[in-house]
Image (cartoon, rainbow, N blue to C red; front, side, top):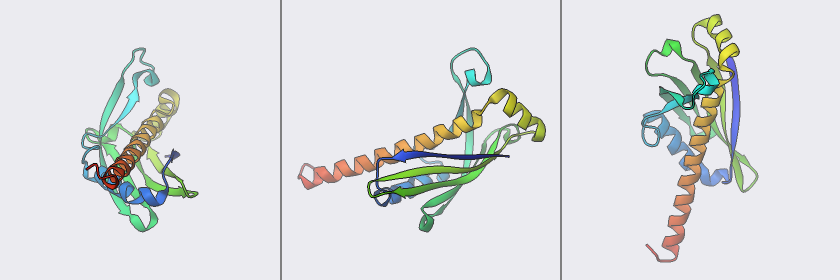
Length: 164
């Protein structure tokens, strides 16, 4: 098993982002937009295939919210042939950082398929492809969260000015 610990800085106070984060985490678990066709991607070049493009692996998610702790447990595994792809178990956490910023963390472990043979293959040829695909997912969640908060703030500002 490999440990994964990564975060994305958010230009949002955690208090303002909490409700939206919990809604986004729940949407991830229910496979709703923007996660209705969720797939983890691996660049073909990172697999030592000398062409551009990526391999997209559709994943199923299981998410359980823990709103009092501002986090959700998350499990990811391939929809088709799950025994051939890594499986991830961990948490998504929203952490306050001062009064005007926060961080979105993804922490957990993933297990390479095929036991020790899969771990050697992962280390020798894939060079962190699973971590890169998890980073992309975390960045996608963070971007969605920032966009939703900005949209909510702009809508409130328009209403306050009597424009809607």
